[in-house]
Image 1 (tube, helix red, strand yellow):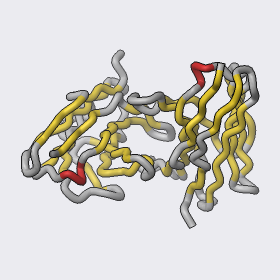
Image 2 (cartoon, rainbow over the protein chains, first blue to last red):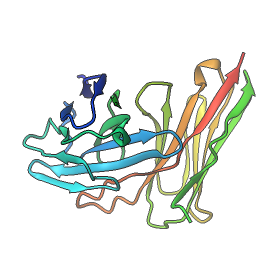
Image 3 (cartoon, rainbow over the protein chains, first blue to last red):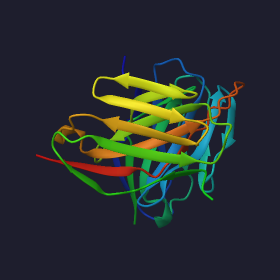
Length: 109
Length: 114
């Protein structure tokens, strides 16, 4: 039982490149979400999903896309990376309470 | 006014001290209250959660919720250097039907000095 897994752990991108951050959970939760964490800003919700085929925007969705084809997986796509997207990204799953993955550190040059 | 206020610290205490961490909030709809512990360069780890008002104890940790004052606390007894981390409070109105969004405080950084 791995809980919530995220890949990669660390990534360096050049401005304009695209990439997908992977998130998988084996807790059979319907709700999954993506956050970014920046110094002084706390955790901010990017996108979330209440089940397969259903996604919605959070507080800071611009520049990110998501899809949810299965209960287990919830990838986050950066379409054209910008230096402002340098951050630590966390995936979370749960209902009344949520469980976080280990994070992906992204540096955009 | 921000929905959740949390003193960022840093808070530095000697080993063995009792630590009190607090958050205030403004949204009376919050029903679930959580504390997360986050070590440096790691993901937030759920430490404790409480539904509605009252106290909950787990080993050296006690969580308190006072909904009338919109105030929650986390107490750590006999603090250890391994408790050094950032502590985040989080809240959720959870009225069912997929409304699971959490509102977080910005975290308090705690250092326990041996």
